[in-house]
Amino acid sequence: MIYLDNAATTFPKPRAVTLAADNCLKNYSANPGRSGHALSVRASEEVYNCRKKLAQFFGAGKPETVIFTENCTMAINTVLKGVLNAGDHVICSGLEHNAVWRPLNRLKAEGVAFDTARVFLEDPDATVKSFEALIRDNTKMIICTHASNVFGTVLPIEKLGKLSEAYGLLFCVDAAQSAGVLPIDMARMNIDYLCIAPHKGLYAPMGTGVLIALKGIDKTLIEGGTGSLSMLETQPDFMPDKFESGTLNLSGIAGLSAGIDFVMSIGIQKIYQAEMKHIGMVYRELSRMKEVELYTDAPRPQSSVPVLSFNLKKLSSEEVSQKLDEKSIATRPGLHCAPLAHRMFGTIERGTVRICPSAFTSAKDIAMFLSALKNIESKAD
Image (cartoon, rainbow, N blue to C red; front, side, top):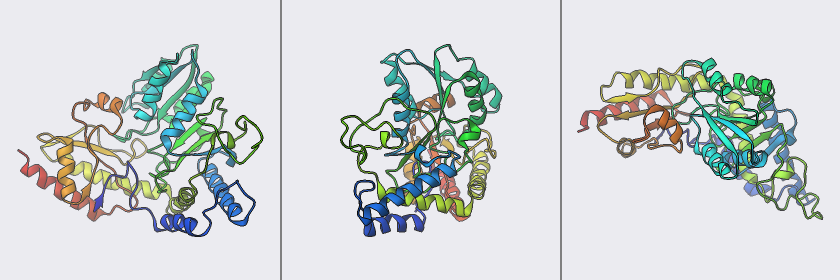
């Protein structure tokens, strides 16, 4: 199988990740923070060490700012539903995933207003100005994706962070497609909340999510057992316990810790350059194919992540993806849970075929994908 669906989740996982998760399940799969016995202490150490790595990796400072969630979507919901109240106003971008779009529409029914800022693909300053033009007296937050999960477009989050700081706004970033792919320093970029999908660019197991919160969150999404202050009838008010009710995904966290080590051992920049080289090769070849529709200019470093969408004129995205699957090549068709992005690019009616390489993708994999696609194109009615 040639796996090019890494924007959904990376596969394969590094051997170190699978070994770490397996070692946890076999040797210290006890409940962290719930007991004083040796296995529970070992589990607690694993969790703390992973928090520390994440805080350092993303320039967040203190480990207690790191909250483990079920996924990136839960992290986003924790921020939006925990911070916003009736009468507040929010600004998002026109490239948002449903993980942002749907909670905002849910909150709209509760009195939270929001506007969608236009993204200018080749003009980051114009994008920032489009956000600024939407700021009101009651604007409380800017939330945006760091990089589109459909078209790979990178938003100018550092400039948006400065804009947020200048107006006294909270700034939340959906880093599902960028964490582990692009450098992120929360302090330098003025990011208050960073929502992460570790099973993507950090090569962690699925079922892991991370929220790093440098500013407060008033309301909890769920409440329950935390292993701390158990005599109280209310949720603890300190981090990270306030937002971590119930048993953590310990084996997933162990795998995540190993995933961070894997990315750091190679280097973000080296992985990014290799993946962008693959995407660049694909783009050049697809641009020469008469039946292929492309929707962006050639991917450029720092302006794109290694995600590319395309279509064949005479086939649906689902048909193309199915034919590639028959040749043991995994891609993803459709709307990718991001209708806003598809509306912006005019692909809402048919979606696109999306590919995304990983650190394990080879030049041979790309060559075989291109050969298979050319064969499908030649046989299209």
